Length: 348
Ligand SMILES: NC(=O)c1ccc[n+]([C@@H]2O[C@H](COP(=O)([O-])OP(=O)(O)OC[C@H]3O[C@@H](n4cnc5c(N)ncnc54)[C@H](OP(=O)(O)O)[C@@H]3O)[C@@H](O)[C@H]2O)c1
Image (cartoon, rainbow, N blue to C red):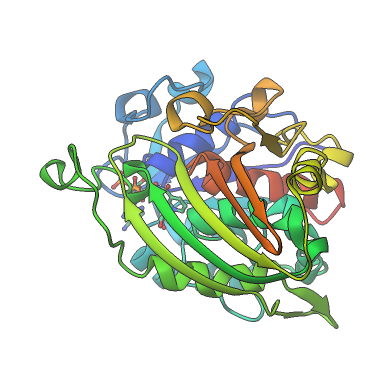
């Protein structure tokens, strides 16, 4: 299989810079073409950097960002277009580009719940990707960054029967993009509300955990109630999860389910797949964003593993904490891994 030509829309933003990391020296994809708004147009990636300790190749650091012109993106006929556009911009351009033949892997929310758009967390519901097979243009959506972490935490427990889920999120500041939350709201503070976030968790999890029937997703019956908060952490969404499952279980059984969890990306040994998608920690004080946000190996999969800890089980009630890197596993890395799956299946 030859190398694929790809583009990143919103390349100067927090998620866009993570795309630059994930696509640096990638074995499947050429150095991407980069697009932003007029603001970053003409500047290099090195000139717009806002992420800490970027792992971006010299070639990409010196690459120039062009102002987005959707006609030229369509004309270039990229094999895959990675989108990190803000919601209103994505709402106005992504569907039109798809109808003109673009194969879009988006992180924006407007099209996530459309019946013809698979909402895919690679290790959770990679089979939903078959919805785009044989289509010239398509959109594959990533979920909300907290939904992705929660879906990875819930998937290993599916065999126990998932019934009711209560989750309280502690979401990093980078989840709001750059410059994001005003400093006087963020510093030494917790904001107990994030616009439209709780609804996204309640709606997206049943779709992600749904089953495919005749090309359509039948949502899971799992019921999700969420409380979303913003905390003064730079990167990493932590979630305190309480799940009612269908039968009595034990710490032994649940810890084994977490520790042994594996899926198609691991089987295919894809470049961005973490060897262990869930890292289960027994220590009472883990996970912590500062220690665990970049979990995942080999090096290319840094930030791609979810860390689960604080496991407690009483009868049919399972409680745990899950931590994921919001702009890597919760955004750019998830899109790149979805594209790697489609490339390995010959769809791209
Ligand atoms: N941050 C997260 O943790 C996270 C996680 C999951 C999903 N998401 C979603 O991913 C998307 C990007 O988030 P982000 O955090 O990276 O936001 P961000 O830091 O604000 O970056 C936004 C990007 O979009 C570009 N842009 C803005 N207006 C544009 C326009 N009119 N035409 C073309 N490009 C335009 C910006 O370019 P300029 O710099 O040139 O203006 C920048 O590259 C959003 O839809 C967000 O909801 C974010």
